[in-house]
Length: 344
Image (cartoon, helix red, strand yellow):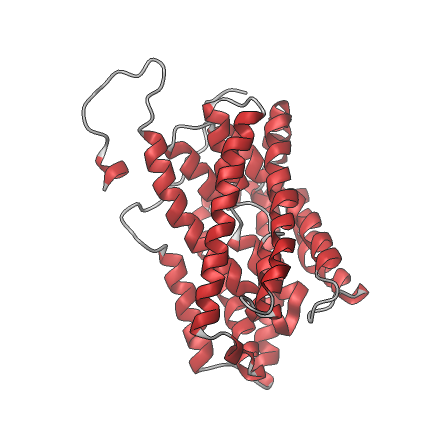
């Protein structure tokens, strides 16, 4: 596969210790804690949240280039490796977390921990970090796209199989909601991409705010339901610290497995970088809407582990990408200090 691509590579702000969007999510959680919506307002917010989820997955389908993803099939070994990390190794580690209950995690937090292990990989940050580290960017684009497409089907199926006995419950009604709120809008976006793709491309920035605003609405609705139901007394500072520790171990294991496992499989440096960044990440943008559909009133605790893991993966992978960018490559000529944007 060619290492060249015409796609604009998104930049991540290296000078920020915290992703600004995480600050917006935290602010939304605080707002839900102080001013939770209830009664008729909760019904209105719930309906708006349902519409927002459908809109998110429609835009998701309309943006995703099927032709570009199919072109990436030429690098099928790499994509199968990423998919195995995302939908096989991650879930196995999530299942192992059952041993942390009840001494480290509550059953509800463990459900959320397992759910984050079932979510598809990211696209944007995987591309950005792979680019910074001088890895195989086209492979990262296709791997993230494959994971996102597969996640529309695999994440709900894995959740139904592995979380079927949890408090959220997965009935025929839940599966119908998944089809109507996630799969149908996604397929509609794919079918209409020929006509709406240009408009979406021209208004990428504005629609990006629509994406993020929709997710904030989903978070506000879910956390409001949690506040009204009184479930947040379960999350003590000690439990929160234990959750962060468990997630740090999970991330370290996946970063090591994806890097050294790819080496054992015979992949070169550029491909290993793409595998590591695409295979160790979880998508907040895909996971939050899915959780709202799958868990309903229990979604607030279910999404907390994913929100924390998302910020952790960004901070850790930013450090790794910067270090990889300074690795000497064949043909490199010493030119003095590294660029400021990679060391500041």
